[in-house]
Image (cartoon, rainbow, N blue to C red):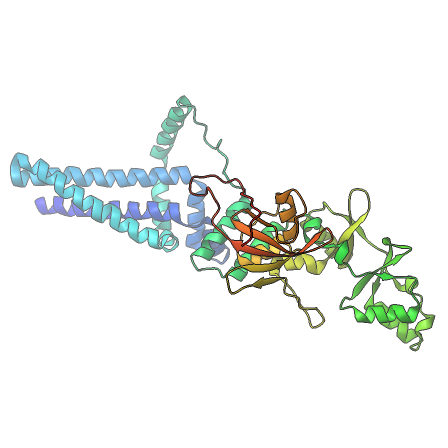
Length: 436
């Protein structure tokens, strides 16, 4: 009889270990992974998805089953040790069962499960679904009691909202996998750029009007053709009377067709007849909407205007795609390194470099809410247009103005530094006017 009781105790420990492993695996497994596996035909993953859908009942079954086996094992072991050692058997049973339950029924199975939660979840999915069905009536009673107690305590089920939006949670998951070595930096940047599209406006990715290549439509045809061939771009805005008055967009392919139709006689070409009408878009339009507009209109070029209708710049499909995949260069692009790392650890940056591109290249986290370019960030923080040689320290970096042309900062040197007051929690930017 004693050996039968001993066998039942061992069976209870095995059952407790099963529920402990199931609890850790099912609460720690990835719901996204299970959904993906289910879409690929895994039935076990589908069962795990069903258990996720009734999470409260699943947790109730796990805890109920675990406690039944733990209490049963302890009670039977106490009777067994009492028969063997008399009254001291209670103490012996308490000590032995505490060690055995903690090691073999809790720590060991949970450690195994936490190291491979998805795999263990697939293994325990069907037995756990059966346990939820068997214990269903009892679990409904327990759920009712719990809900009554929570209402008495003023806790509303489902009232708490997550701290982060789904997009931010996805971004955090990508960042975590990157730190764990599962996603390369380039892939992380691409996924992050894709998630950023809904938060960016056209003004964040456009080419400013000061950097646009435009051609006067009133130039003689031969000179105009020479100007077009001298650029590395395919689509070129045409202006008349003043650069702000853009009358069309000339496509190089249309110009080549016109030259061929005129048998090479460029004097007979009227570019205004082959230029496409300009498409103007507001600077505050979300980039994701502009991407959809490019696809629906089947065009890759748009001019950006501000709230007063003045041209601020231009945006192309390539500009948007580069926010996702990084810089796209072809054989006609002029390679210009706007970010140059120096041997002393500093970085020389052109003032027109977008903050987002600098963060992506250097894996920094400079804020881009108030300014688009590095020069704009320095001007925003300095509250003035700095002179050549001035230095400023903020956001954990020291910025020194290397070149300034009129009212534009054209080059800066940036050095990562430890912010003053960082140790005592002072997060306010520190500014200085000292050299490096």
